[in-house]
Amino acid sequence: MPSRVGLDPAVDTAVRGLCRAHSYLARTTPDEMALDTVFSTYGQTLSMLQKLVTNPETAVSDSTLTTVALVSYFECLTNTLKPGFTHSHWAGMQAILAARPAESAPSEVTRALIYDAYDITFAYPIAFGIPSPFDNEHWRNQEIAGPNGLSGAGQTLKTIRYQLSVRLPRLVVLIRAARAAQAGMSLIARDRTLRHAMDLALELVDLRDDVAETTALHSVRIVSTRDPIDSSLARSSFEFNSLGDYRAAMLYWQFRSMALNLTLELATLLPPDRETNLSSFTLERQSEWRTTQARLMTNLFMSWQYAKVNGGLFATAELSQAHMIVWAGLFQRMTFKDKSVAEVKRLLLPKIHHRFIGWTIGLGLAEMDVACDVLVGGRLDAFHAVAAKATGSRRITD
Image 1 (tube, rainbow, N blue to C red):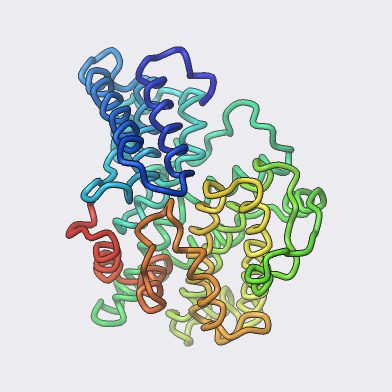
Image 2: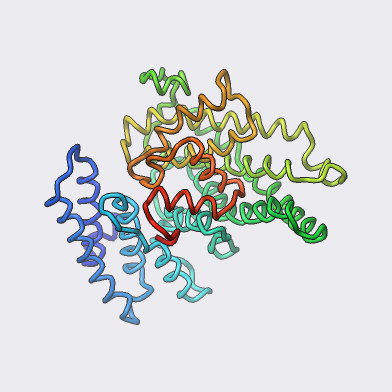
């Protein structure tokens, strides 16, 4: 992204707006004049963007795509600052990419954006109950763009995380269909849905690189957790070499955890009288999955201190979303480590009430259960109702 600054006025204005939003969110007290300045820059960016998208020569250019990405991040950061303000440009990124010739090779900027914009590759499809628009051969196998300061192991983890993020929404759709099928789908249709879900789940749960993860962990120091509340979840914490290393590992653990959550959820839906089911989802294998699931949850808990100290609100925002995946992984447990699941949820809830996420603020334990259930194929209408209540909006599209 920094390589684009200074080359295009719209990108520069979008960067300025994003920086002003960051500065405002770092304030400890509200300031209407400063807030007006933030949104004034946003308005300038939208005016320039309008000219770009209506010009056939620039409508699907990298500059336009970069501007839309920056505007989308701005909207995510500021969606709680003004009543009635809603973010709406994530779909614009998808529209630009869809409008490009399918045979064209994505530019370095495009690949960099796709690797990091998992709001559009993952969160947007999850919220709307659809497969990711990037879940195809063209996008799944894109390489990391440019030098990124990561080790070889870190790049491997980032690549796997990206592949999981674009493929997991489809598994959520299949498991939601299987869960709903218990209340009225024909046996043949349900069997077909379960078979597709099983094949994909088994593929994704094994999409990992244990050697790369071990190598990455060898460069991480273990330190004591200083905050007494944080230490309730993890007495020790990871000290990463850089925020890049932290992010590569944390997102890898997050999406691997989700793959395990979904696979274990699927195991509860399978008829017990099928040999193929029994051979793929043996009790022994499910036990191994739960052990790995617990390890990954613990790794995420041990990452909080580093994120908070070294990356502040920006680093902890992504980890807060990871904690929602952890929450979904607790549904089939009575205890975690030496604590009841209820106690773990009570400790997690304030971390998920993150100001940069916005819509989760104020949700109680029961509402968070509904919100996180969507991550393992729960009802979309229930999730939309909770999200709408939390944001004061009547439409999920807001």
